[in-house]
Length: 270
Image (tube, rainbow, N blue to C red; front, side, top):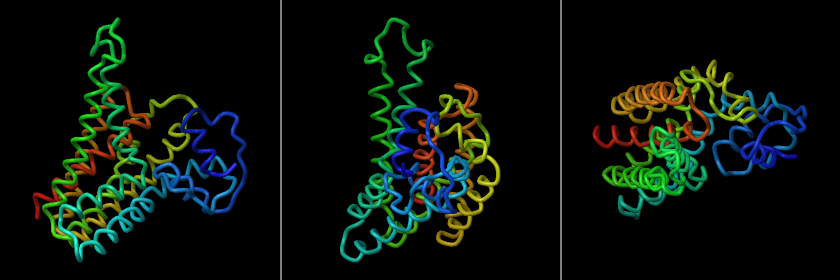
């Protein structure tokens, strides 16, 4: 069983019944790639439970790789394309490479909020819940907002902004893991790596996130970094108070809105 097959199973159900194997270093990288993106880790074979537990250490690396990919696309097309096209390309590359997990997480997390009896009548069918359509509209609005704000930047600014956005979207997950308990289903993938991701991985993420912000975007990037970290903390604490913690969907929702906040600050700063 390779990493992709196993993680697909884990995302659908539990880690129970999975045959773990010992593998050399690289399995944790593969697990991080498979969890955060829809890109296959072609170098991966069997992997161990320890690989998944250590995978949060490599979330920043995945963010950097995604950002470099999207930034290069924008830089190449920036020689002959208008800003509107570049903004669409930047957001599209990130969404395609991640399988739009952020948008899906935001939509489903919003819908889950309205599943509560406090938010809808007990006898109201789930299909009639305002969260289903509201979540989809919110996700669409966030994507459209990203494109509109990126279109206000020059090609070089847009390329650097997308790099920081990709890193911020992956690194902010550790803020949530550090501040909130995991409320995902027993045996889920998040249950395996959550505790590990709230330790040293948080420090690595914050250092990587801040370094990219300062090196590529200077003062504006530093300001965006501080605001986005603050947002991630507020989002996490609100979820902790309302729902008792975070699960996989809300973790990706945190990532998606953190990207939006980062672009917003950059657009205002420039």
